[in-house]
Structure formats: structure tokens, C-alpha cells
Image (tube, rainbow, N blue to C red; front, side, top):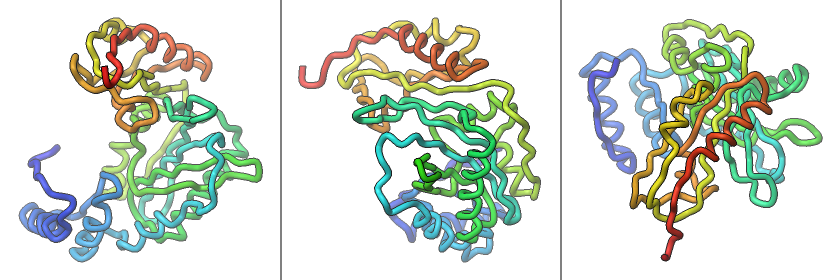
Length: 286
């Protein structure tokens, strides 16, 4: 349970590190876990390592960053994300999630499907690539989110970062498998290794595909929320707000999460929810 909210300027490394050290002393912390993204990773990792409150040296995060391919990956190459949890140096695969995209020519990400519809052989090869990278980096503890492109000659790692997947991927895993990755991260700090069962269903998140502009009115969110197979939905906009276009990261804040017995069914249910949302958006510049 959270006990205190502390605000920090991530651009001030010395101030951020001093805050971490002071907080660790005040609360007698046993471990410091970074749950955010790239900007503040290294300052937090450096201070946690100096204090002896993390098993991962700062260099580990730099090696993970360098683990992705330097060669260009075709925009249309299918991609999956691999969620892992490392406990005492042992890497456990929590699941693989497929990207949904707009297709050619832009291939903007429009959602994610879990589990990724891959055969056992493909999963084994992908898992091997990811765990080999984690081992080579010296990663000892914590979650990791690895993006993998599926190319004709085999999988290629695009990026790897020491945090859980965003875009509600942990929720998809929970719905499909009955396994909570976020709870498992904290259990892992106590040395508990994750036990992940097979998926009993598919779970998909679809981002609402809206044009850029200013929102004037909208309807349909209440109907979406009470649909039996909808497991989560969010529409953070209010009249007058700017709506981000497809392809901009902010557009992923508006989404629906559904469950179903097949990938085709979850895709259709996401499409139904998108049709149920009726938004009147004034184009930018009008």
C-alpha cells in the first residue's frame, strides 16, 4: 500500500538521487524498484546501486538499451511483445502479446492481442532470444518488456526495457490467464517465482481510432461500459479537449478492452465498441 506521494523533477539528476537516498533512509527501504520509462531510469538505478538497494547494476540498463537491433526493421513486420519477470537471475516468460496495426502504409499501432497467436515452436525461439539477452546483460531482478519483430529469417529484438508493458498489457495477461503480472513483480522481490498457467481465452485492447481535432460532443461510452464482454474502457476526453490523431502516443489513452474465445471474436468486439462510440470532432484549424 502506498504511504506517501513524493514529487520529483526527473531532469534534475542530483535532486532526484538525493530524494531517493533520503526516502530510503526515512522508511528503511530494502529495495528500490523503478517502474517508469527511459528518462529517469539511469539516475534511479545509479542511486539504488550506490545504496545497495538493487541487484541490477546501472550498466545492465545500458546493455538492455543496446540489445535491440541497429538494422532497420521493415515497418510491416509483425511484432510481439514479451513480458518477463526475473527472480534471482532466473528469467520467467509471463506471456507474448501481438500488435494490431492499421496496416499499410503507416502501420500505426491500434491495439494488442494476448496471447499472441503463435505456435509452440515460434514461442520457444522467441523466448530463447529474449532470455539470452537478459542473461547477457546481467539482469538479476525485475520485469522486462521486450519488443520482437517476426522476420522471415527469424525473430529480431527491437528493444528491451526493464519495466512492465504499457498499453494495459498486464491487464490483458490477467484476463487471458488469470495471472496478475503487477502483483507478481512485488512477490518477486520476496523471492517468489511466478507460476503462469495457459491462457483460457483471448484478451484484446483496441484504441479508439479518432481523427485529430477538438472534441465537441460524444455518446456511447455508457453502452460500451455495460457490454458483457468488455473488461475495461477509458475515454479521457471532455468537450473542448484536443483529440490526438492515430499514431501519436497520446491517442492510446482512449481504449476498450474485450475478451473472447478467438482472436477473430475479440477483433470483432473491438470493432463493435469503436462503432458504438460516436464523437463529433472539429478538425484542427477550424
